Image (cartoon, helix red, strand yellow):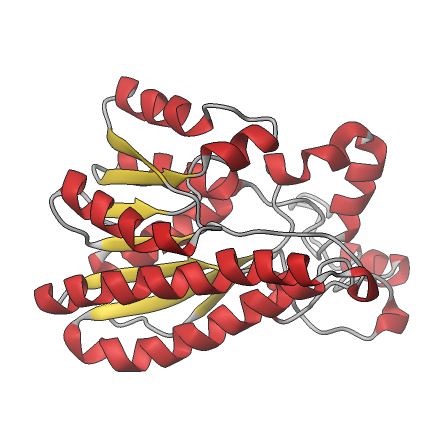
Length: 289
């Protein structure tokens, strides 16, 4: 999956999944512009996360640049693209990862909560796309990857507006994929399930509860890792993915698969079903755990 020499802009790139995406691109020889909001990072308890990540990448021999910009401010969206294109000398790959997530039951959501999530997750993404796509169309080559969520297809009552915005972005991916395909520009979505990141670090204050949650979250029985997502993004950004567009890659450990709720947690086998499978495993192979 060759991305050497590609020029990549990653929004919300200082932490979590996006930070791992940035590392992965850099180790493969791409030049990476990492957009981040210092105010948001500081508020989350991670001051200087963007600068620290760039220093880490450069010390490892990679090329990375900081692009500070707050996507809660619509005026900064196009400036981020312009700044990235300037420091990189162009733009080949766009990864839209920045998002705002407010966890509240639907009846408790305020107008400000709605506006904040729509601004970051939709409006700023649209403005960035409007600025980026002409650059790619002119070169007749480009890769756009949006980072969605399993909540596009399996929304949680805990974050209804966030889920709504992710579903809307997936719809936009399909629309743009058709429009840009004749010009060599692909548009795809990668939708993670439960991934262990700093965003859900508060859940790991009680590791017993976290382990129970992760075990029951999907058929695989664990939380995903940021590199589980980053490898898919790398593939979609490469020359090998030129015939793949308008695709939604669900990196969920199978959590998105519809199941009968009477059967228990999503996709999990009952004890009886697990034992039935164990009985069919040849003695020469390891048993299912």
